[in-house]
Length: 423
Image (tube, rainbow, N blue to C red; front, side):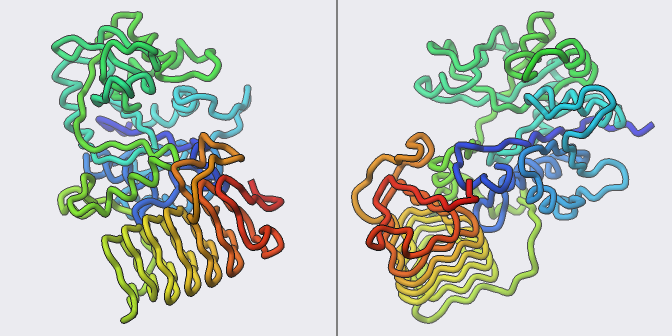
C-alpha cells in the first residue's frame, strides 16, 4: 500500500460572493492575481516548495476555469504517478448524494481518497489566501509537541480580532480555548484556516460528527477534538498573509505587489510561485508610452501611460490612454484616449475609445454597498463598454453594453449596469 507522510487537502470550492461580478463565472481561487497568476497558485506553490507532493483540490462552485488551470498539475511539478494533484468535485453516491455543505463536510466526503494514501498527517488548506508558508516547519512543530491537531494562527490587532476565529493558548502554545468571531476577544491570535491533523484523529472526528448539518472545522471538528482533551497546538505565523475576500482587499493586495520594496515578493529565487503560463510573445512598449511602478504581463501591447497598476497578460492599452491605480486582467482591450482610475477590469473585457472611468464624487453603491465600495470601478469578465462613456465611482458593469444603456453617455457614481443573462 502507498504510504505518504503528509498529504494536503485544498478547499477551493468557494463562491467568493464578496468579490461581486469577478466570481460570477468562476470560483474565487481561479480569479487572476498579480498579472499572471491565479489565487490558487499560492497554496499550490507552497505545497510543492514544502515538499508536499500529494494534493487533493476540492472544487464545487463554477469549477471549469479552475480545473482547466490545474490540469494534471504540470506547472507545480504535481504530475506524479503516485500522488500529484487530484481535483475532487462532489460526486454521486449510492446513498444520499449531496453537495459539499461545509469545510469539514467536503473533507468527510473524500475519506476514501485520503485513505488510499494512508498518510500519517493531513494538511487542510484554503484555496483563497495569498501567502508563502513552509508547511514542513509547521509539521515539525506539530511533531515536536506530540499534537493531534495544530492550527496555524497569526497575530492580528485587537480591533480586528472579532472578525476571526480566535485561539487562546498558554505559554507553550497549547490551545486552552477558542471563540468564533467573539465580540470581546480574549486574545489576538486569529486562526488562518490551516490545520495539520493526525490522520487517525481527523478520521475519528469526521466520522463522529458526520451528521452535523454544514459540518465545519471551526464550528464542529475543532470543538469536538477540544472537548475530548486531545492536545491542540497553535503554530504562530508571522509572514505576509492576505485574505483577498473583498474587492478592496483584493485591490490592496495587488497594489502591494508594486511597492518599491514589496512586503510580498513574487521574485524570490528560493520560493517560486508556479503557474500555468500560456505561450505568449514578449511585451511591446511603444516610444510614446510611460510606465511607472507597474507589473506588465507577457504579450501585452502598451501604447499609453500606466501608473501604479497591475496589468495582466495579452492586454492592449491604446494611444493616449492613461491607467492609474488599476488592475487590468488578461486579454482585455482598452482603446485610445481613455482615462482609467482605480478600476478592476476582469478578463477579456473590451473598453472602446475615449471612455473615462472613476470620475467625479463618490456615492454609495445602490446595488450592494457592502461589496462595491472604496471608490473602485468593477467591470465583469467579457464586458463591452462603448466609446465616449463616462463612469463614476463605486460602479459595476457586466455584459455587452451599448450607448443606449447609458443616460447621456454617463453612469453616475454608485450606479450599476448588469445586462440580461448576466449575474
